[in-house]
Image 1 (cartoon, rainbow, N blue to C red):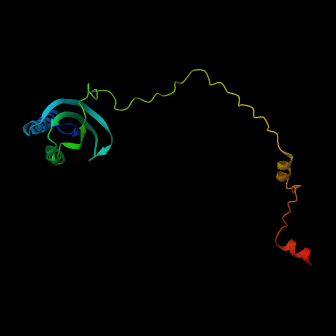
Image 2 (cartoon, one colour):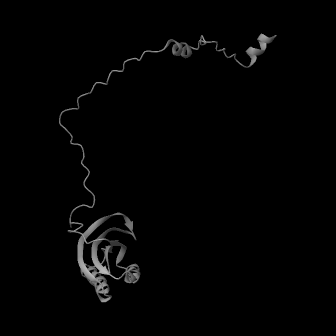
Image 3 (cartoon, rainbow, N blue to C red):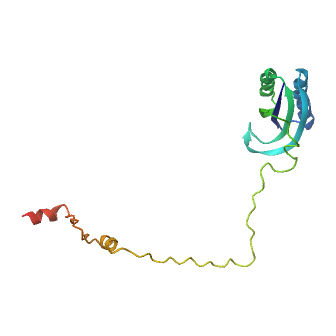
Length: 167
């Protein structure tokens, strides 16, 4: 026997009574095949991150149970064929959770804190002063297009001007 966690997203267009019946069928399947239910968390109705089968919200439920690993494939087949289940995920766990994983009514993600708008206009912050770094004389000469003093040759322009010199 191994410990499993199954998360379900049920279709909210069904009546709450139908959702309860489907959850009872799923827990009944686990128990009838030698498993034992530890916890059924009914998280409730939540908004989906993206539409699934044209639905923008779903009823979340999380089940924790012991089951024989050979019974997981038939359970997943039942969940796939169940029209009330929009999505499901079965995970093998090492141990049972200490407490509820999700609290009904709390958002799935922590809220994003927006900066508070103050009544006073924002003070302008002066830009930091950038001090000029000392420049080497050789770098200045290269920047101005002058040849270096260490014997570097100048580059002659190509094109018509070079042809006139050769004549």
